[in-house]
Image (cartoon, rainbow over all chains, first blue to last red; front, side):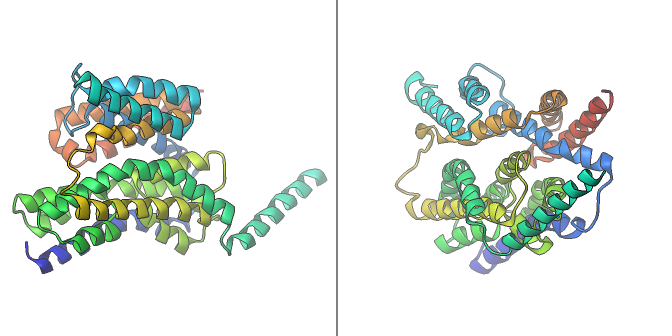
Length: 109
Length: 254
């Protein structure tokens, strides 16, 4: 791909990634949602996080990997415990990153 | 009755003062947003860095790699772009794949509207939604459970996260040849750890836990049965739609 094509590609990707984020907020801010829609929307965040957590732990390389060799599953256990106990993003992140570093460097996964 | 009306007037009065204050930057809110963005920045560091390295490898200049992270704030989409470029694919393939990967933000952005409405001016809210990602979305929605949305908080959170993404891409594009393996620092688990904690914090209702688990199972099942949907992350959209509908149904039974 030559220089000009790369710039065109960047601008194209920019547009298709920007518009889905901006349009709903720009357009829908004027309307009042019915109660049932609001309730439905209130479930979107926990649902999305359930999906993201599962994918990031059980399919870390983009393919589902539910096995003892999946280092992410092992790191998930103390991380979940830290999250439930501390409910602090920073402590959880610290536990997760340290566990991962230890598993990677010393256990030899 | 009188008491209630006074109370109402009080609440409204507060809202007006708040809106006036919001015309200027609310430093406390801005700082809180920036602080809440720090774990996100930590998670983006290895991802942005890797993007910079790969972009350089595939023939982008340092300024192109960096500008791509300025103009596009879509980790998955940017990796796809690199992959297609490497395979010698067409620009239109990259753009179509990115449309698919980013379409879920229609849903995410819509679910922020009830919180932003009447609190953040529509133009500001629209512009700041540029910085909407899986991570800023999760952190903001978690914040809105306890505090009202403000422009300053949203600016602090989204702009700091975006700046983290841009600077790590730049670093990767410049230093790529010196540091090759970021896995050994354990940073690869930063985002999964963040999702885990946000999920735990997001569970307020009993129905939340059922719906989070069932959405996770549905998402994996779709990914297993239709690997193509896994590739463009549309399994997240479908699973979320089913999950949120289940949530409404479970909640309606009580």
